[in-house]
Image (cartoon, rainbow, N blue to C red; front, side, top):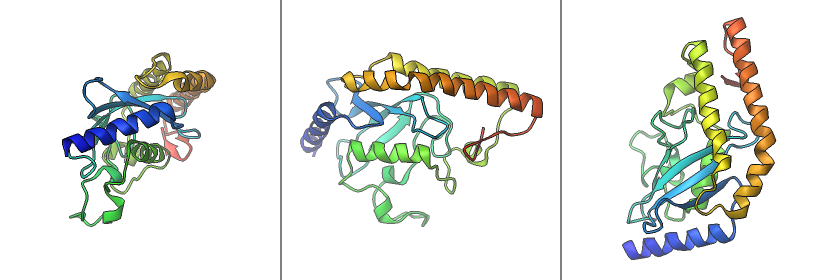
Length: 216
């Protein structure tokens, strides 16, 4: 199975290099290890994550595609379906078969037809439309926040990290990533300005601010 999975992953890598998919770039952490991938997700438009660049790792098992990879964000991110250590918790990455808790249907969980592309499209969709019914980060799902001053510093630090990724070309991003980073430079500046204003308002009003129906 190891040889089959290796060939399958190399084929997907070659296809993504040849035909990049909008919204993310992907490559290997180490050129000698096809099972360890590095991806950079571009924050979806009209979400709190717009303009950000979020680095993550995909760790594929040697029996892929029978079992799903594990995904962890390396860039700090605040989201109901991302644990505080960065682990991504969505149905498509859950082990195949019946859900012993009864929350998910088998067809919602991992299927051998899934590829890096379908995984990343699902993750981008997750950023735009969180599932608060079964959160990995309960604080994010409930809209709970640490004190205002610390919260402002935390969020600005989070998005400054995400912002810096436009200066770094991931392993297989090529011209696609360069052009995307140029297009988003203006939105990065706009996002930082918006965050400053949101937290400035919170300090004076001492109550939660709302941004796209999500508590900041």
